[in-house]
Image 1 (cartoon, one colour):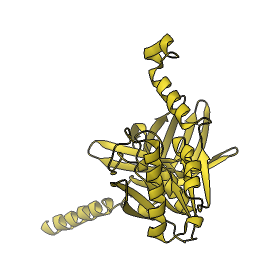
Image 2 (cartoon, rainbow, N blue to C red):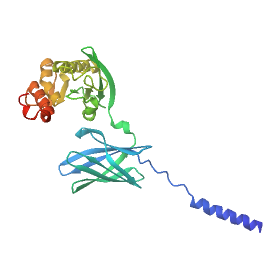
Image 3 (tube, rainbow, N blue to C red):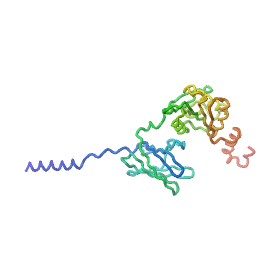
Image 4 (cartoon, helix red, strand yellow):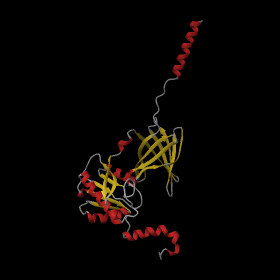
Length: 293
């Protein structure tokens, strides 16, 4: 009787061990997912960075060609193997519906704007840092102020470079980070920096004259050329808005530069541009007295 009980016990234990086989470990749902997105004549590589902490999931959107770098997404909802979120612009809501597949290594999704939906599939990239070019944090001086910047190095140096000029407002170099990385991926040694009084740079941009701001750009260009050993005639400059306005002034001061790119440049003088900015800020307060002012 005792032997039969022992055999029965072994039989039950055997069944239990068969039913509790270890399942293959599930890959984490967090990480960097990248893939191709296209519709009609438009195509782009989009990236989602999915993170998780004690408060829940966070998702960031990047598209270097659209100058978008780690834009936080909203309305994140996770249920089972699905994760949905959206990006709200001034006029449209971009709704993303996604599902983890292939052991969480693929994010299968669709983007819906109005009534149009476009499918996509993003694959996990294990080494997140490998997608970025090598960078170096640097410091230079202008008018006794210490200014901070970043140099991005292409994987294959082609002895060509581009410098992104600062623009109006209090934005630091993070605003041009996606653009700087994109240029480096295209083979340009790229430099961008914090305008005085922004980011890690000393000074006060609000009290600085345009001459001082242009002087900062000129010092940045000369410092970069010496630092990298790239001659001025292999360096181009690019500016947007107020940065674009500064392009011809800098080219006149450093004629050796290879080229200048002006994007969204005001079609008026610097003084008229500043006056228009002042008018726009004070239009509601002054009303009918605006022209007199």
